[in-house]
Amino acid sequence: MALVNRETVRIRVRRMLGRAEPPGGVEMMSYKRNRTIALLLLENGNILVRERGYVVGEQEVAPEDLDRLLKVLVRREFPRSRKIRLHRFADPAELERIHQKI
Image (cartoon, rainbow, N blue to C red):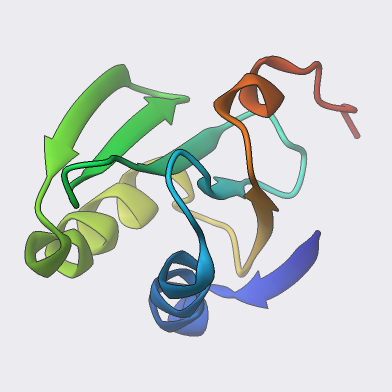
């Protein structure tokens, strides 16, 4: 799990998603781990975005639309954060684990 600057998080997420295999993906968390955005690769090439924080929901997006959506989601879920935690996972069941709260 890495702490990444908010300005470079979109670049790092795209790079990590490029190396992931479906149904894996990347999870972005606030420093305290109480708000998350999970990006899951789907078999059809799209990305399922799960938002758990101020807003709770899911949406499916095409890879070319991900950058614009991430910009909005990072601003909404991590408004005062300068660092964001990134965690790569291979199985979506890992998202259901209990996060250690700080």
